Amino acid sequence: MTDKRISVAAVLAVSLVLGACAGKAPKTLPPDPGGAVSTAATDGGSTGPVPGSQADFVAQMMGQDSIYFDTDRFNIDSADMAALQAQATWLARYPAKRATIEGHADERGTREYNLALGERRANAAKNYMVSLGIDAARLNTISYGKERPVALGSDEASWAKNRRAVTVTID
Amino acid sequence: MNRLRLLPLAVLLAAPAMAQQSTPTPQPTVAVPADAPAEEGLTGEVSDDSDWQDLGIAIPAFATNADVPTATSAGSTAALGTSLAQIITANLKSNGLFKPVGPETLPRPAYEEVRAPAYQTWSGRSAEMLVQGFVRPGEGNQLLVGCYLYDVALKQQLASAAWQVAPTDWRRAAHKCADLVYARLSGENPFFDSRIAYIAETGPKDRRMKRLAIMDSDGANHRYLTTGQTIALTPRYSPDYKSILYLSYFNGQPRIYIYDLERNSQRLLLQTSNPLFAPRWSPDGKWVLYSMASGGNTDIYKMPSSGGAAVRLTDAPGIDIGGSFSPDGKRIVFESDRSGSQQVYVMNIDGTDQRRISFFGGRSATPEWSPRGDQIAFTHIAGNLRIAVMDPSGKGMRYLTDSWQDEAPTWAPNGRIVQFFRTARGSGKASLWQVDLTGRNERRLPTPVDGSDPAWGPLRP
Picture 1 (cartoon, each protein chain N blue to C red):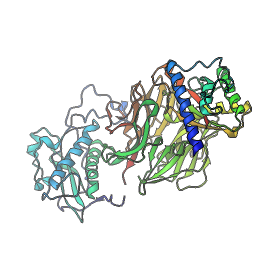
Picture 2: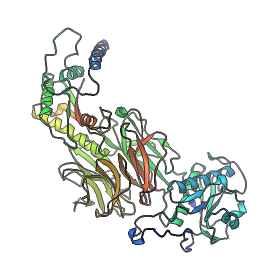
Picture 3: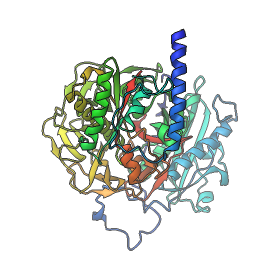
Picture 4: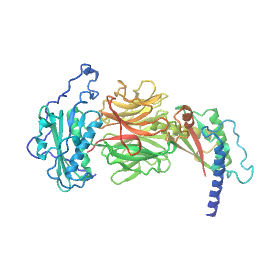
């Protein structure tokens, strides 16, 4: 009971910090996926994300928790590879952690096909991480098709952001 | 369901033969315009309604022998008589086929006049057709509703029928009467006495709540079946209206559930850790088609609706999804991206003889075989998403709609009208629409909140 309360408080503190940081970034743009390098999670004082938590994963990935796809495609390009490599590195550091890869599609397709397409994208991401040495049993996939857009516009820029696979680690 | 007893009464009120007579097809009383399309251009494949649009149909309030209270939501038998005529008027008007005039502006016939219309009254009001009826207490708690269609110019009864309905089902008597009139005047099969399952949507675009809901074909008797705590999608009514197949994220993964409408309970169609999509019934309700993803590859399977071993029907690399049976149960139309983009294919029900039928440019998706068998409705994607039809060999492709995003057609029980959902650019708000096969009579269906994924059930048993 006490432990749980402490960890909840920690997560809350973390999300407050993250929320403050996120507020400074332009809301309409995903963080640039290039060039991010994982850094040690233990720098600084005690106010950072709990190492190995989902909040830590998000902070470390700096946008590379998501990869993006072309219309109707599910191939992993070089930017995706870099992002998945960063994710795999983090997962290798915390071997007890499991993750769910959420596959998504943009709104300009039919609903059922997009469900299958989202599943295909999530699987492409999973397969690449498995090829990097992550145990397949640690990775679940789920498709939301076009039901959960992250960018709300009806334009090419929004659709590009919505054709994605997002890795969410399980705390 | 047990209370939904609807008894066609063969003998009633004795006298004039109640059976639907085989009188000559009533001729529209308006002249056919000189520039009317030639007959062979339509070859009976399309119900061209141009002849009917100006056909005036008077629908006065139904008469009663005594104004007595009823257990219906409409009130006494007299009030019920007005409501019945209003529903029939709305049914016939909403589909753009006729020009009915409802009870508000018409004199109410006496009970004795129902079978002996005052023709001069109606011809004086420029009515070509007249629908009269009565409502009175039936056996037990039930109501007896009679419906008569007359040709005013010919001074002739064209059709009649009567039904005994439970008080909760009183609206069905109106739909049955509208069906009688529609079928007799158009020569098409009836469809008003049917229901629609769909997905009710509320909330912001990135967190839409999606609930399973059902309603009558005119939007009445609306009911939510799920709370919206988990996403529900793509419902399909069973042919006997006893259950609904749909996709739910209950327990996290998208899987197919069977919702039992009699017990208000649900169960998984299939125990598997794989995602399941696109549930469909066979026309006889004995089989279920579904699509299952495995390692990113999605294939179509068939299994008995009562449970049992599934048969895999497709094995092409890629996404095979969304099958729909032909009405004779011998063929399945489905979509596949095996060629590189979504296209429509047909196959035998054992999975043999798979062949592509859509060659239109762009992508072709969500095929649904008409209950008449003569057409396949689908979503054509070339920039915008539009509803189109083609014949089962892939010929004769025609668009029925032209909007930013229309998808997921579902057929009226008679194969003459297609419903679909339309998504608004920007807001992402979805709404239910229908259009007839001419493409001219398009209208939005009234729903309490936004709606998507309409699934039109068959004519009610």
